[in-house]
Length: 473
Image 1: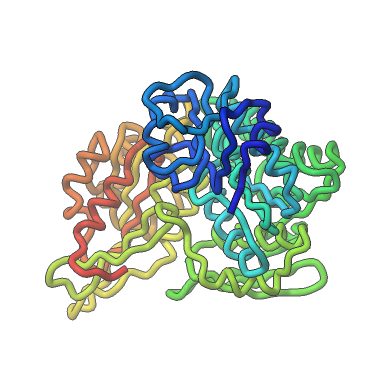
Image 2 (image 1 turned 90 degrees about the horizontal axis):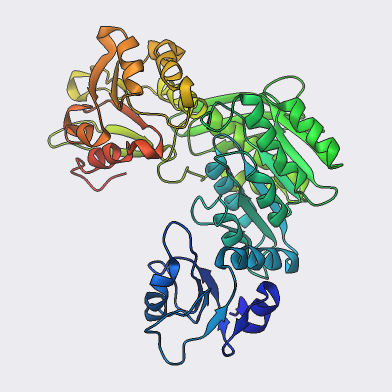
């Protein structure tokens, strides 16, 4: 099936093709390119022109280039443009303009990708739904997701993130969402923002890029609600709130965790509803409620969406749960891999989940296992970083957590503030901690691994998974 013809791509980008071609997909990475894709050579961290030949060897139908590339097949189809990233943005904009899909954009300090996946699963039960397979939420990820938007899609979910001021609005203007969902505003990226209010204002800019008459779905309990309200009024957008407080339009009345997942009871306009998630966590439940509100706002069917959420599980590294069986053990280690990223808001949620889980008995002795936290640095917090880490030593969940292992200099602040009885192991780097992964938890324990992507704490979770002696998840 043709996604882009040479004529359509020329019209969108203003570039010129050396011959006619058609492509069934769009790629910026020759390693993951599918046969028949259009390869776009971006001059970003690495010069994509060095991989154009690899792209054709992998089966690319054509390539978007800014300059001459040597060593290509004689009949290679090329679309010459002035700027590869600008061409990608224009393809994304053109794909959005020709689509009749209802578009929901998601942003927030935490929970973006998980909520995007909830929306994908819930909407897929109602019609063809498009969303990025990965966390493509930046200056190239958003236009790439849009450039891949199938003509037949009825729904599209676009994740939009940021690291510094001024990044969200241009991406929202390309996505032109009919609804936007702001999961929460928390302490993150303080190296680039001076306050939580500044973060909220940046998140609120997603509302300004919406289609006329669009709906902003925002967390009523989150900092920045009045900023969201002002942005909605500025863009003549509808505003729907979700949360636990009495003022929320979609209010979570109860959230019950169990071994099989989470049961949510909510009051929504005109009635009460109940739905289940296969995964545990109040933060997941809250974001699911926001997702349902967003689906309703674009004319989706929440009666079809709620059953679809019953089997939803978080993406890898965002609260995924594994059983790790050691040799001769009667009980597994229950491993929670939440290593994709971290900030104070998401760490708060993760520790709360950990505290809610009852460890398994340790085999025949029936001695209860422990709750173990294995934590890597939270990055991009600026000068507030040390104090924000130390503060978690007094987190309410710590009463139920037996041992805390830490990696990194920032986490050393938390480690030293803990009572001696809770201090496990500390190492300066995640790689050093991963080398002693067998010492971090025992059969029957529940172990959370959490930290910023840049802390590389994921290698600790990976090392612990490799301890498994059974093919059981």
